[in-house]
Image (cartoon, rainbow, N blue to C red; front, side):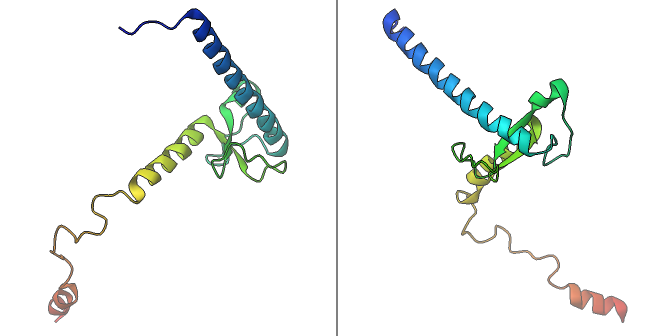
Length: 128
């Protein structure tokens, strides 16, 4: 078991982490508040409407995935419910992992059998 860091160092690290979290939340609240003023409280994907306590489930999605790109006109934002937002980010991860690194890319097809290659001839025989 590794030795524990002295309390002074861990408290300094905790302060840094807490400050980073507060900064992120402050930044998010700023553009979230702007987006809620600009756009109707509706998920841009599924169309669900939000109000009251449920409004916290409506999130700001950055279309270009750059959280520092926050133009005042909101052109890089869309409001998504938490489910559609998670789906959007998962879709992006899936595209990245399957785009260039697919094992079959550049290889010949595994099977050379083409079941419909003779279809025109078979149809001619059936119709005659």
